[in-house]
Length: 64
Image 1 (cartoon, helix red, strand yellow):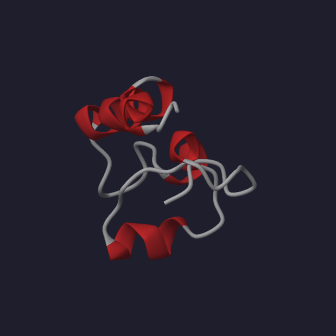
Image 2 (cartoon, helix red, strand yellow):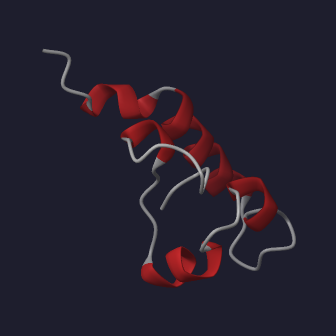
Image 3 (tube, one colour):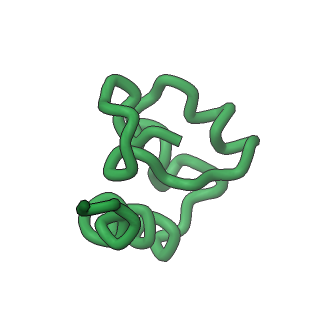
């Protein structure tokens, strides 16, 4: 799923998600959709998402 719906289609803007979350998020920005009002929200999951978008995705980029 894209973190920023209007962002690029690259690893730094994509986060793995289940089909239900992907469908619910749709065109919303991550922080508008995934917050404490969301029944699936946990701080631990949010922190993993942020870790992925800031640093972890870099381990999967081909730097050739």
